[in-house]
Length: 196
Image 1: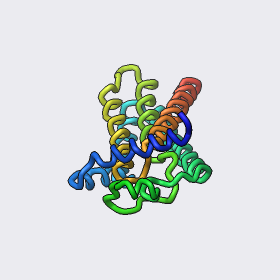
Image 2: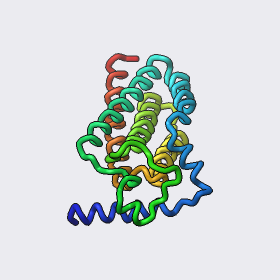
Image 3: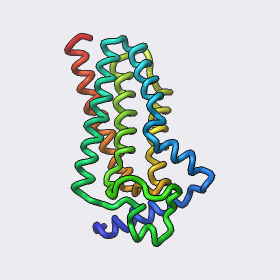
Image 4: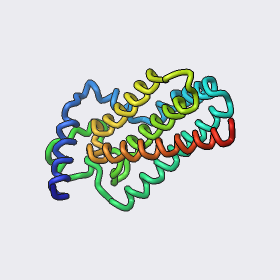
């Protein structure tokens, strides 16, 4: 598959997914896309980390979550500036083929790769492994299912808003999972070595 074919497939797949939604769902997708809406949930996860792991391990995992989000977010900014791939809402082919833009133009010009997808999957992975690696008493399966479902829905919201191509989401997801895994294991190594 050539690069042009890959881009065309990405455009068509994004357009198809974007048009699955209706105006009734637009407020839901907008809510999921709003980072500020999720701040209370982040706080609850942090309190739960300290409660389950104790303050030393819990604080170490909280710091790993902050590190993961900062590293992932800044990496996204660098890649976006380097690739300069227009978001679907600024892409003339997407606009000409009827992409839904329920709230108009979304974000800066460039969207490769999705910081929302990378950050949510990075947070999900780092926090889930933070629980599992540092507390063998519980499986945290329910938390894992919930936090990864949240990451999927937030990522989908970016397509529904016309802010990202499917390819932006997939690359962001992979990057977030990779960074989240690496940071979680590094944190676990530090916790074990420091005997926290």
